[in-house]
Image (cartoon, rainbow, N blue to C red; front, side, top):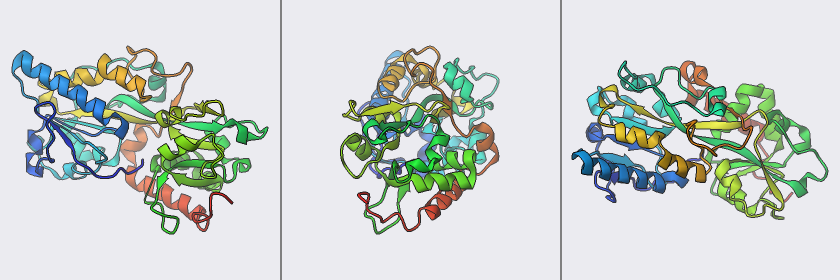
Length: 358
């Protein structure tokens, strides 16, 4: 995941209100604490605003919600597991899957009880990928698919990759780009798609990750890649690994093609956790997250909703892949990501400062 730049959150206890984050001791007063991928943050907050206003008009219930805005990501999620007791935690958390929301001491407060409603049916691609949490704690409502953007003119007669293993082929040496950022070429990458490296490491092992590393030209911001793909820029390669939204934003569609890997786009789930005692109060928010209004926003922005009731979310025949719930329940997500990153960058040592034009 690319680390965003910290900015101010957006507070919704009255629509349109923007405040600083509550103090840690006041987190338990929140009905919802949410963070979403940056392209979704404004429309997501706008939808929450409408839910808050409708609930207040219909029943007088004042839902107190805080949606992280700008580029904030870590705080206060990185401190939630240290809070003690459900009364010190928000009623609902909304987040992409990340190690700070998967800590057992935090999940224990959000486990569903017998009164919790069943999850809605999922799209067949999501069911087949196993995105539904067997414990029912992390309730997936959307997914970030990582796909490929292939410059067809740079293929020069070669067969384009079809599955993830193809990216390890030496024929793509120095021709793959994926998301990352550093201030200049003299320092290491500050941020990068560690989730991608984790998937490659788990599926193909250390040798596979090293083979992939040898094929990487460099890392750069996804938007920069999307805007330059298909041009003659030396900053882009033949293949870019991007979130589906950024891949679709590329303007040179006569030269590039968006490719869903045949063995599945890498999926990063987006979901919510609800404290059992807050189910009834937060029903309007749960309905919004699973419902058609947000679903339409997600479809338009290529962050497909997982609900089987929302059509047009995925390309025909699309498949998804990801590490799976057994991994997240039994392994240290953060440590595994860090291990994969160390192996990857060790394999590229000495190449990071090489000009992309060479």
